[in-house]
Length: 297
Ligand code: GDP
Ligand code: MG
Image (tube, rainbow, N blue to C red):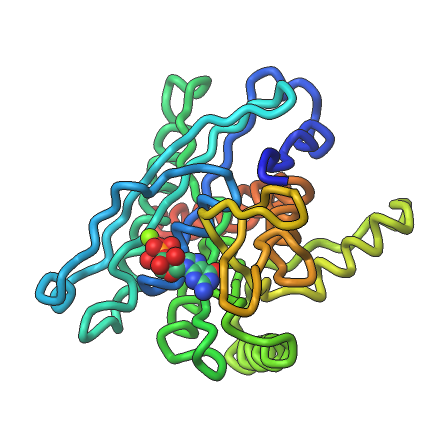
């Protein structure tokens, strides 16, 4: 339905002690302008985060560099509080020469590690503001025939700094066969180029069959083919988010139409804690080890 995001399961993902404090999660979105990043974020979190966005004119676009835009919102569902930070990266892939776009984003990620490291080694360790990025949704255009050099460059340079979750943007512009073909091509190209996107952990063997089936379906869906919309339409008396076409309505949350719900389930109901754990135990630890090696030389 239009009314619920689904993060009330968060307490089940972690010890009850932290429930009172609330949860926080930081997600970055990367992909060229117009791929539906802001719309998807608004759809995922039932928000209206980007309503006064400014559309750059052509001249501004020519010498545009990537900028970092951070927005935070606090949401509450069934008594569970979530502080969600969205890091947007406008300008990505837009300049005439975008060879170094990934560097701006890499520096941002490293800076957050630097800051955390400094705070963690400081005197006031209790009140650290943790700005480390837990997940990066990378938007792949639906109209290409797979990954472009820009996509591969970005993911290859950043896969050891952040959990990269690839998504196929604007999936309503493709039919089911085209989506399957594009997904297979993308998976093949990721492998050929040794890009390691975020891997969902293996399921515990004591989980029930329904959970295992859901987990299997999630894994099969990557890269998630997504649709976003800020428009609420009526379908058979239900009010849902959708996109209206002459031939019918595409429903954002209809699992037959896209992987939107799977992506949302993955992000907020089942894997948010794992994304945070991997950020802390793998990406941050990597950074720390490299930093400590560097200063000891
Ligand atoms: P951003 O620049 O990546 O943040 O893209 P926006 O979210 O601003 O969307 C750009 C345009 O694409 C807007 O006109 C949206 O209505 C449209 N759009 C967003 N998501 C979708 C989608 O899933 N399918 C289609 N067909 N259009 C979309
Ligand atoms: Mg945007």
